Length: 246
Ligand code: ADE
Figure 1 (cartoon, helix red, strand yellow):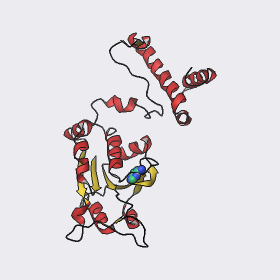
Figure 2 (cartoon, rainbow, N blue to C red):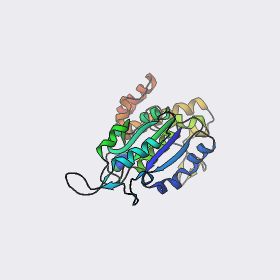
Figure 3 (cartoon, helix red, strand yellow):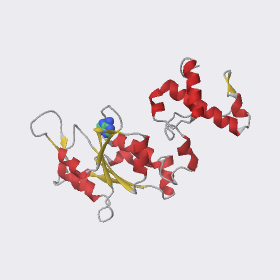
Figure 4 (cartoon, rainbow, N blue to C red):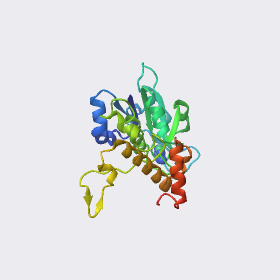
């Protein structure tokens, strides 16, 4: 998977893209990045990439020309990668979208800045994604979140093939609780079952705890989770005890 990031702030990505998982993924040849500086596509010697809005109003708007040309430069000559604009008005990003994007061979992530982006940029992107119902000062942190969530689903990025599959949301539930040594800390002991060595029992306990947490903290996820009869019986029991905390 090749991520092309189009931004006015290339330096924003230097440290995060060289952090452990992403750098390991790159070393393994599973992912790669290129950061494209919009200013390199400015049309004047002052490298101007924004301007005042037509019709008046506060703030500056990113100019269409430099941005479109920067987007088009990504993988120019090769297959056209899927183009995504990060914007608070986009479809809200979630695990399902991460999986969908992980099946692409390349993505162009376009970071908007300032008060907005010339509307004509929308015509050259394939979709618009938001990372939540709040406004960031720019699309850069959002692009990093998409890169992180998508990368860990790309085969070869995580050391252990299982670890992405077992986590929260991959089966529509929150993750079960995890513990490591010591077996007791400040009077709180690790649940007995985890020390039992009985893998069947442990798997069943983990499933039940994942269901309990989901019922308690994110009950709406249960409507779309993949549940069997055992799961449903356990949820009934928990609800009978008065919710997920019983
Ligand atoms: N740019 C500004 N706010 C954003 C958000 N919530 N998601 C994606 N890009 C953004």
